[in-house]
Image 1 (tube, one colour):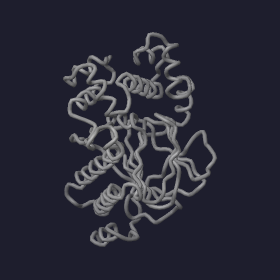
Image 2: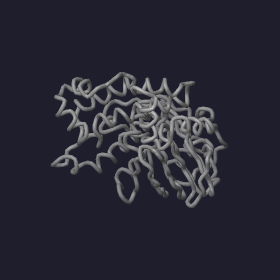
Image 3: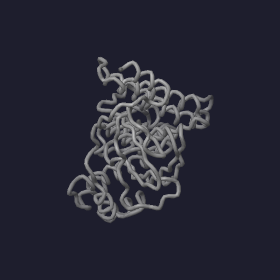
Image 4: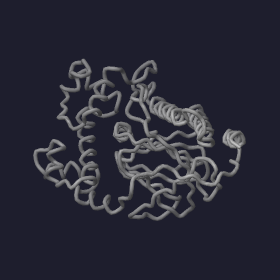
Length: 333
């Protein structure tokens, strides 16, 4: 699933409620995952497509067979066929069973869904994380090995503790996506290749995620970490790549943006909840962060709201193409 900052994944992260589905699409298409407190891992089994996001930055990422990418449901995004024209209202992916599906499109994806506000918020700080076989062969191999084990479990629902195994495999995938972040930072943030986080910093970050609505200050966070204000600010920037003030402001604005689309909240009330002294200051900060005013943001997101993700529906089982999934299918007969 999507990785929170630094070594958040090294803690005992429980992926309660996680599930996976398979989907097929053919071009031209413009698709989006369900917005909200969801953490997603998208695995490209066949074909190619492009991911576009506009928060926290606006990259366009081309994805090919074998690639995997993490996405936060709190970040506006779209998956498009290469060369597809822009669309105001992306469609949702069709949800099919992980096993027993006939190929029905140029692009085949396996998507993991974790309903977790902490993971979804954490991933917003980093943005999409991409694992490519050519760049990170060990991580890619481990991710796809986990997918094969997931296919084993989904192929036969009679196994005891099946859901527990699925959750454990999702947690394994989370850890490996987290390692992708460390691979880039190792050797650049600190000498000797040490990991850029420590338990003191993570205790402060975890405390923030546990109560993001609290009026956190730099002194509060430093005190939670048991560090001086100066040392905490320096260590925090090494971990997240941003200053504590920048991260706090971003998360407050992100929370306000989420509330604007899920509740009848006025701009004035949103400004107050986000810790701004005036609606005008809030609107300016919001526009700098998201590129549009709160009112336009609300209208655009509400226009494409749809029901929450449902469990994948079962399909007629046919023999998978190859690999562990085929063996699992044969065993279940």
